[in-house]
Structure formats: C-alpha cells, structure tokens
Image 1: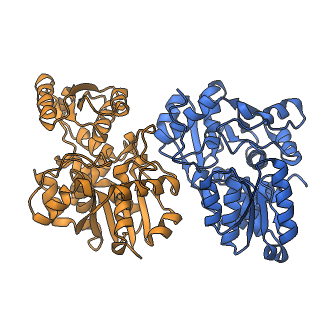
Image 2 (image 1 turned 135 degrees about the vertical axis):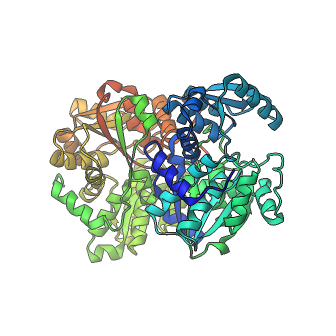
Image 3 (image 1 turned 45 degrees about the horizontal axis):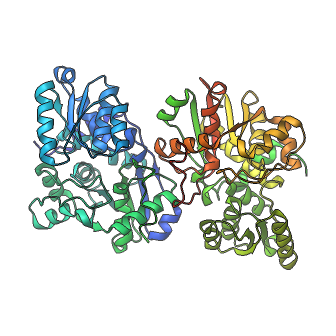
Length: 318
Length: 318
C-alpha cells in the first residue's frame, strides 16, 4: 500500500461529509486553568457510532466497487471499529460480518447486533480472530476492512483534523491517541500539508507503549499483553502506519493509568462530556508532561465516548 | 415583587452575555429515533459552574448597587445555585456567603470553597438554613439572593430560551424541569412574547410533584420530604413563580424514578453528555408520555451536569 497523499484525505472528506457528523470543538476554562495550556477538543465522541472510526469505515465503504458492495464487508474487532463498520454498512444497505472475541463486552456486542451486522464469535487470541475472519471471508466473499492497515481507513481518519483546521486556527501542537496508528498517521498527513509548523504528538499508555518503543528503536515492536484501561490502544502499528508516523510525527509520549483516569474525570466533571479511557490519553499526557504544552494552543482529537456506564473507573485514581 | 416583563429578560441577556457561556444546542439521532420526536437540547450543563443557575446569579450580581456589591451576597443552598452564586461573585470580585446543610455532598462543598466563598454549615432543616442565613446577613450586611423567588434571578434564567430561539426555529413544545419554578417561569415569559404558539410544559419527578399539585389545585402545595434522585427539584414554588407559571404554562407532567435514570442513561450513552438527574427529568417525561411529543419539534432546557461520579445510579433502573 502507498502512503496516502493529502489530496486523498481531502477527497475522502468530500466523499463522507454528508454521512458523518461534523463534530464540534469544545474548550474548558477549568481544564485550561489546570493545565496552563489552551486546549481545543475535537469531539469525536459525538461522532456517529461514538468514535472517529466512523470516518474511516464510511470512506472504506463508499469506495467499494459495486461487486464488492454486494458481497459485504468484514472485520475482526471487539471495539469501536466493529460498531463503526456495522453502522456505516447498515446506512449504505451493505452486509457486515464482524468477528468478535467471545470475551468482548456485552454492550459492544449489543451495539454491533443493533446495527444489524452478523457476529461470529471466536476465542480472544489474534490467531483465532484471523482464522475465523478468514473462514467468514471464504464463505461470504466479503471485503476485509482492516481497522487501520488500510489506506481508505487512514484517509477517513485524517478528515477529523481537516475539519478542525476549518473550525479553529492551526494550533501549536496537535495530539492524538495512538493504538494501531490510523488516526495519528492520517492526522499527520493532513497537518504536514496544511500546517507544517504544528508539532504532532502521539499519546500512548505506559502499559501499551509499543508505538513509543517502535518510534525510538526504528523497528515495529509488538504490543504487550493488554493491561491498560485504554482498551482502544492495545494494537501494534502496521508497516503502513509506522512508515507515515516515522516520517511525520514529532514525538510519542506515554502516560500512567492514574493520569488516564484523572484526565477522564476532568473531561466528565469539567467539560461535561463522556469520553472513553482511550480518548482521555492525550489529556493525561498533557497533565503528566506539562512542559511540552504550557502556554501553547493544543488541538486534541478526542477519539470516542463508548463506555460501560456500569463499570466506570472513577475512584481508582486516588 | 412584580412579574418580570419580556423586556427585562432581554436586558438581562445584554447585561450577562459577556460573562456567561453561550451554550450549544445538541441533537441525538438515537434519542430522536427512540422518542419519535425531534428533540433539541439547550445544554446548560456546559454553562459556567455547570448549570443554568449561573445566568440568574450573574444577573442578580450585576444589578447590585455599589454599596450592596461592597457588602457581598448570601444564600442558602446545597446545590447548583450555591456554586453559581459563589463563582459569579468571585468573577465580579464580590464576597459570597453560602449557608450549606452539613449533610450536603462533599463535592458541592468543595466547588463552593474552590470559588472562594465563605461557607457556614447548619442542620439540614429549612428552619435551620433560614435562621443561619439570617445571622450571616445581620453580621455581614450581605444581600440575600434567593435561588428563584427573585425577579433578577428569574430574568437571568429566562435568557437560556432567548438564546435557544436565536439558535433554532421556535419549537412546537418547550419543556423544562420545575423545582422552585425560576427556570420554568423565566422561560415562559420569553416564549409567550417570542413564540406564543409554542406549548410550555414543566417536568417534575412523581416523588416531588408539588408543582403539578399546585398547578391543578390552584394553591401552592408544599414540597414533600425529598425522596427523588433529582436533587435539584426538591423545593416548592414561590408566590411569584407560581403566579407566572399559572398564567403562562400549559401543563406540568410527572415522571418516575425509573424513567429519570433511563433518560439520564440515554443522554450519557447516546448524546455523550454528562447530565445530572434533574436535567434528565424532561426527557424522562417525554419517554413516559410519548403521545404529547410524537412527531413534534421539542426544545429542552438541559438544566445542569453536576454529579458525583463515584455515586451514579446506573443499573438501578432495570
């Protein structure tokens, strides 16, 4: 796959903008006061299906050929990409086949089912997921839409910051969470074109710091067994996202679980918005490394807001 | 006290608009689908100090004489009016004296303290609160800013719907929570002038239905001992708010605790915004009495977003 050009992201935005939510940018006096930075949150928690993933999924679906569209789309995911792909497929009258680990949260299973997708359950190992997905694809002829190792998906994710630059002046720093790197790499392509002076930072949990270790060593490092609360950031980079990130991104900073929950609490208590743990990771980085951000305007892609309200982490951070 | 005229509300808005947040209006496809109505939430949870109360408090403070301003303001409240008055006073360099029941939540005490107000604690009875407030006022000469039985406060609260009508076409129905009646009466004065065809509904918990009983009987009914989760709606109407509500409001509808928690969950899960129980009461009414709202455009003043994140009710509604 080729590294997407900015022009591809611009075209992706034209292609998807009537189907997505143009999300608002939110500020919080209280959080600015605490961080000493001037923060602008691009609220992808307000995006359809509750996460920026809907952009990439919609772009992937709207670039299928007619034959591909007839056979449907497939993916394996226990998280926001599954819900986003299922919903985007439903809106376009396309079948979606989702392979989910049998351990995935009931609330996410319900969301995917609610969008009318066909779920195939499997063991929770990556091997089992890939094998089950292979069987589903052989059976259905569906097109595999990878959550991030996919040009169309990366281009879709890169439209969030394109909108942001339409809504706000270019910030000194832009920070996004990094899991598989789709959002960070798409964001970086847009910014390098439209605002080359903006510093681009990836934010990652200390307990899932494979992107930082890859960035420093120059070789993709595997993700460790998942232990972080930021359940959207457990995957490792792909060759494609890593090559974009190495080229464009200034730094990847990590943060502890305590700071992630603290940041999440600030978003809920002060900004009054529901942000999932992964979406709180950039603010956690800002709280933990204030020197990078003090006195600067900082844009943040607030990645999503899908949480289980009966299983919240508040209180654990003290 | 006289019934405020619309012109007073318009002037109040000019007076406070540089000090308040012009809050956004939010919609949710998912919630519209569930209710069969076209709902527009005026998000006063995004207001400074987290509730519409900041409007009334700011208007009251900005209409003090110089002498009054020097002596400060006082109130008794365990809730959002206390925080709003404390913050508005701080912004204007004015002292605030807040009488709070010693049983009031630590998180609300901390907010009031954080704004630099002086707290005097008392027993939680209305008698103790009024007596303690009397002593504070005798000692300090501060001006009592009642949470709703106050023209300036009512005018401030009536500015939320004034902004709404600037942001949106006039809705078929407008619904607000009703506790002491400040928000509902201020809203009704604005609407009767700017959109006489809009139906005005007050929303109240079944377990605190004194406003509905007053509305039906024509005589103010006392609030029952507080049992509802909607802790902002425990007070009874005043002569002033009742006279405005009788004149302008079309109906007061009640809703159960189960529906209140269900509505709160929808706002958090679907709209991704943090709404406190009292703020969810109008949506709960819409869910419980769908016939009133089906196929209509309905404006909702989403009153506030101050909650204790470590003490949430989710799960109890099933």
